[in-house]
Length: 308
Image (cartoon, rainbow, N blue to C red):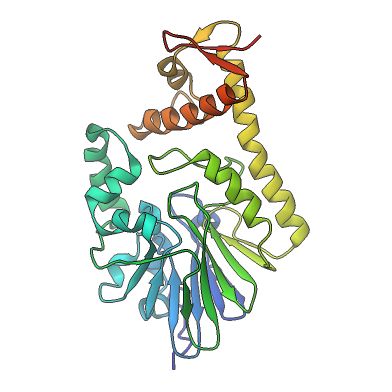
């Protein structure tokens, strides 16, 4: 039987929802940190993802029996190095990103010159180490922890394998990087997909949950009214981006390169190497949507103009 051992560091804010302990990262899990979920059944303890705060929790985290990843990004792997012999389960669409640097590189899709520097950064700042032993799961997979079950529900868009992890029968949903932040949905990497994120936002609204917990920012939401309002504002950011993109094109024509330089997501003062790639992938998806809607026309020379 798994016992409820205490947190070593009492300065970490936490909340308890039945068998789920939430250990909040710095600034309620604002990137580069995250919020750590620890789920204790009668015979198995699971941790959902492993953000930076995992390195400061102590036995409650370090004695975990299994890791269930909602998705793979560097900030969700920052505590894996503490659990070298513990099984790590990842949705099959994100599996190669967990298993190797080459897989994670394809996941990001950044130019090689950016990836080289980025690897050094995440090794330094996130204790990044690949997990070649990671095990793939599929949509609907269940994990019996003894007296409760974790069910993985595939909700892609942020990454190809992004999943919501439901703790049943308690109605507790770890919704990961559907983080309800003011930034809005992130679909800027190579395996991210705007259309899939749109569908995910419809699906997450229908979950039979009474508690929703995010990886970042909002933390734990226990009010259906509050959750619905936050989700609506989060989803609205997508439409706001499309309208902003039309303003950026204006009465002139713009190439994709020019729009990337103008920035849709980030301030022009942010010059980190990954930014151009994220902007490019995001803007291209919005342009494809706007073109399909007849709101933007792509000329033969590849430049875009707003439809009359």
